[in-house]
Image 1 (cartoon, rainbow, N blue to C red):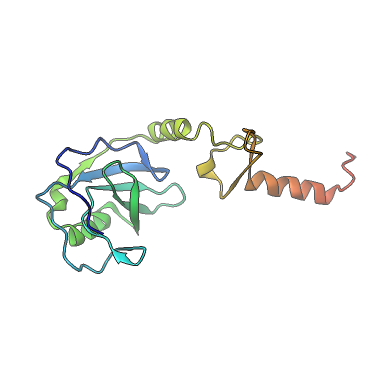
Image 2: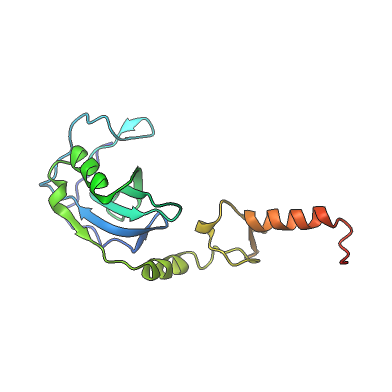
Length: 171
């Protein structure tokens, strides 16, 4: 999937990508090539070509590190999971030779990432428990005109409560 080249530099990355805290990032200029037919990264059945941005993020769900292959606006095109920053950078270098000298440390604190995600998801929270949409598996919304939403965890909790007390009476 060849991408159009854009002479302007991408904007700085956000504090979190895909809800994962940014640790390191690289902007790939014209000095960074892509290994032809690298056979390592496919999206929708097609080998991904050169991307303008890479980001290594701390997974919110585990100790894994996620290498994001991003568009200019830092939207993720693909990901790979690694056990260390060094391994993520090695993977990037295999696909994008000379990318290793492009990496910068992001210096984003967990609180900075949380604040960013709180703002990003301010309108996508469970109306009952208040969790952000990125912290639950699924969110259910009310009618089109309603801002009421409920997460899968609250649905499960309510279902259990109603199953244990079908009459709705308290003891």
